[in-house]
Image (cartoon, rainbow, N blue to C red; front, side):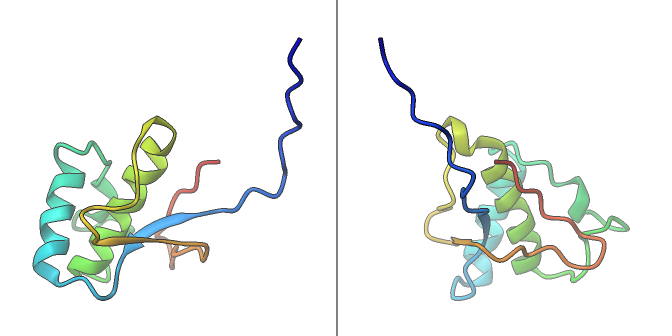
Length: 103
């Protein structure tokens, strides 16, 4: 008989965002991968969508990185993107742009 410990309610909320020190060229390559082969849902960073503005590579990469991370973190996905991303515990959502968090 095995005893399963109770789940902790104190789980940290974590989001995956672009590292401010990563050059735009590296961010763009990682963004292209995340929205392509990576399988992130990047519809919200398209023109006229809630997360299009601010229209910067860094902001778009942050949204895509987080979408990928939340979607795949329990199936081997990470917040690395060749060193272009970092974990934050501060919700990066802004205005009508909601960054998803999945426990």
